[in-house]
Image: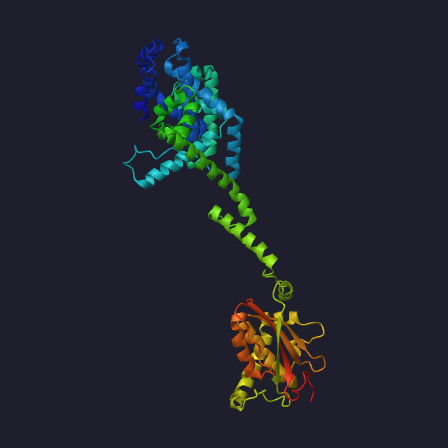
Length: 202
Length: 330
């Protein structure tokens, strides 16, 4: 599934054509870009923030910012890299915001098991699986989400982009504005952290 | 290379980003080092898990919502929508005024509701409630002036009746007192037979009325300090009290009021009853009194134009001393 998705969004020539059209005045071209990249971007935001509603808000905000600054885009990177960069920054800012941190604190006071914010709707893709398996999958997902959520922001960025989204080191470096070495070391630390947190659950 | 260094590089090893030399070194190490091998295995398992996670897709209306947010001054539009959707129907000007007035009234009432709740007035139809209250107030004040107001004590009530006709009908009732045990039979021999029954009944009635709090209370209030409460009357002193009890009962029955009962100091026997009775029952009342004993002088008849309430004073006179009004102790 991820492979399929990666293919659909990785056609850079298609993106650049749409960008050109937009910059030429065809504002509706942006809709095409939204439809193409929204799911992947949304997923990124979800794993970054650990909350469905927050992810929605962040994703929307990222696209709005992209829309407003697309005319200034000069193709130094691919459109998707540029878009992802906006999304990561948006999510990071959201994480930093006082409101978000307070909410997070409140959640943890209740106890890890209790309120987990909003969750994604039921995935209809895996109808073939039995309900038991589905439940297991959901539980697993929740566990991982919590573990990822507990990582420091810097580590979280790289592990989500790499191990959840499947981007290359270079792409990650470009998006996060880091050099390769930093990406590697952060990633190693993040993976170790996750392993510790998940322990025998995996 | 020691294990800690190896472990640091495992992440890259998995990703295949190590140079050939370093990679070979690690592989060689892994062949013999169990700890590091386990580390590698668990790391691989983690990544596999992360890669296989369900993708969380954007909601279906994502693009739509995006456009909503992109609208110029979206907040303004939203407010407009909320405020004016019901108003899209074109209302003629006159109706608009009426609608506005109604809304104003409704909002005022709505605001007033908490106040009314606090005042303890039930939230019903407000206007009718207000009217009722006003009417009640006016009525109450009017009644107060007239002296008809229902006051907590009976005495107060009776004290406020100056406007009534002052004429009092005085009647003297002749009662036998020589046989205390015996029920005082009315003069007529005809009534001798039912007398015992009457006694029993009356004494019971007496007791009843003494026991029943409201009446007892009322009557107690009408007595002066010198008078003795009915409860204290017993034994041979019941000779006349039974009669007063009956009278009182009857007065109550016809809707009259007992103003006071006078008792003789020494004997604690009732001497007279002051009462007010409705004029329409005057005749019946006199008839009733006759059952207890003959009147010394026949009760006067009243003309119809007399006021509704008649004041009466019924004196209980000893049968034995029929020629004077005094009660003589046997």
